[in-house]
Length: 91
Image (cartoon, one colour):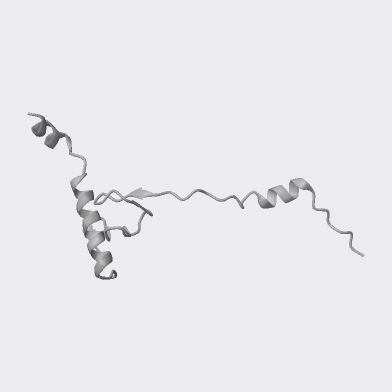
């Protein structure tokens, strides 16, 4: 008859050492500055690598489309200025 293998705390801990969860990392969309998953198209504006790949307005109904257009227009207006534009703006 085989002796039962013991499961000690250290063996249990060694087995569970790979069960840890990591916090999800987010990238910032360069077009609308919304948080998005890296290497995915932006769910807010549909851009990926500087070009439009998903038409987000096609998936929305009329009321949501108007709201989304206003939201994107507001985000475009709030865009931070680069150094050259800022130096011209102050003079």
